[in-house]
Image 1: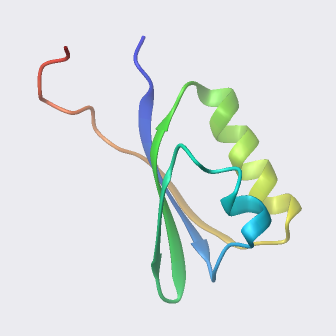
Image 2: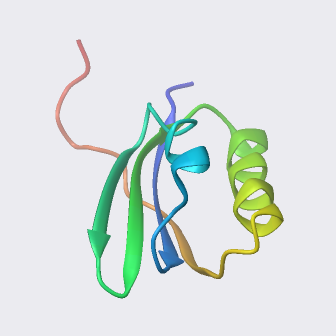
Image 3: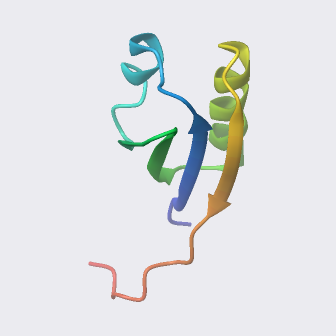
Length: 74
């Protein structure tokens, strides 16, 4: 089963400590939010990311699973 692609919006800017852990995700700042975009291997990874954001005292705005890409794999 392929990884699912997610978009996660967080209020404000992310601390360098968290950015260092997110090397597999694209991070873009769209003031006043930071948007994370990329593939996560399973639901456990999604929950782990949300827990990490919460543990740093950041405000989670939205988590969205994006539709699968229509291009053929391979």
